[in-house]
Figure 1: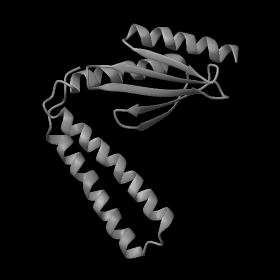
Figure 2 (figure 1 turned 135 degrees about the horizontal axis):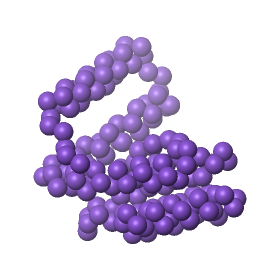
Figure 3 (figure 1 turned 180 degrees about the vertical axis):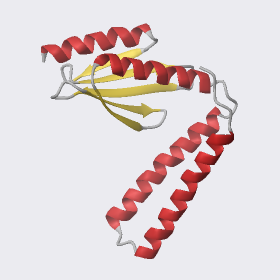
Length: 154
């Protein structure tokens, strides 16, 4: 527990240095919630847990939830969040940013809808194949757009 608390303190100081507006320790140094208020409308929030193996499990919960998985140490967590916040600050300059957030939230809704479908219904093989085809086409479209879109400078 001493290691977790010490590591949490290191992360706390490091995240404050890069602009965290709020860091809350939950459950005695095992879970942390860090918020970055980037402007009046955009808050980027991360939750990370110190696991029993002294690894860190990180997820972003706002402006849309996404899991990033395990990290080896507090340095990796801070580096990842630093890069992620830099990307958000850059992306916010785009006139398409609100549309991006809407699209990201639709993806979250899609994930929940698929989960409910398969947990609550007996889906036929044909429907399953059609849905899989549709989703694969969506991924291919994203790859196509990525290929012809210019990279953002960082």
